[in-house]
Length: 485
Image 1: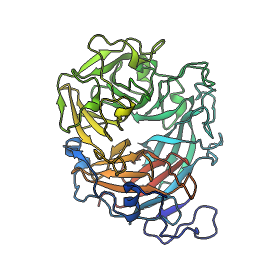
Image 2: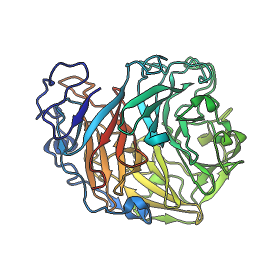
Image 3: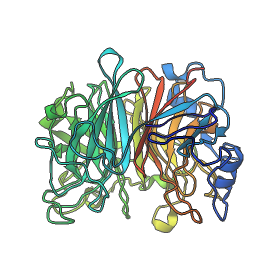
Image 4: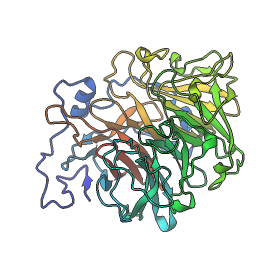
């Protein structure tokens, strides 16, 4: 499998006899260049980005915030292998690509690599769990495995990759199969992965034999210990991501609904808040967030806007037997909706969640190009801390944040899910945006190129490696370099 350095003259993919024919100076190009693409080609990424917010709030008091002094790692260097452009001094290794044989012999690596997390293993090993956002028309579904398959009619699921301390692949296997449209999810404090179905189809539709729209727990070391059991009490809806409060055990959940009324922000109060593998099967109570006086979060445009007295309302029918949850009757006061609720994570005694974008033309109260919200449970307080993107030109960088994680030197790493050239962006504690990686795999044509989005960005437990997926063609990268220098 190929390994590349951003400062190397060339890189030779596995099976090739010499350097690739792509010139080192080649970069993605488009017939009609937007400003986003002009910046990408000139290496001026980060220039002119409209960004507002107090990112320092996110990292106050966290070890990750220490030592943040620079705004980035320098311009991206074109990759001679045509896979991934990185700053000088950084290298990547391709860990897995769709269509290759799984090391377990269970079949081929599935398509549509999405959310992912890295877990500490024994003797310096790392265990990755990777989602596959497969719909019924997916090119390569997750192979069905006895004891790990929920619905044989569904093609989604997760795979697990075991790595040694040098990111050499030791094993790759199916972790759960027969689920649908596994988009994101999140890790638990007890070392398992909660994979989320971004789908709410019922049995008998699209070839499915069971209802979908659930969360499933996945053990990264031995998936048979968790099996394929839907955590039904956590709700049936178009799940996106979760974050667990390690103190209380409360699980926060985002809903990425496609049509108005848009999704809700939820919390799940488990009956066994002490946690542990399998504890969520005991059930609990599902509630949705109500911000008094704010029916739609997109209406809030000013960073620092704060709302006290946030309320949580019991969900009438968590299984959505007749009516999707977001359409259910929450009483005269209603409930708070938001378009494109996606990334979700816990940090500094608060939960943060992402609204990737909102468009008034699609039914939102206002238009924005990405928000990060902070909810503080003890104060019942919600604050808008980050706003991405410009107010007038959606082609500028910074549009449509999706998967998101903390970076080793402080700040965030954000997977872009927009149009044109696709990047992993860094966002510093001071609010500066810089390009960390640029995808080079053209899934379009030479005349009309197209690049797959990035997804699943996460760091190894020792913060020495960034793992990230290219959604299409499904590719998992390990990126190493001077992260803490």
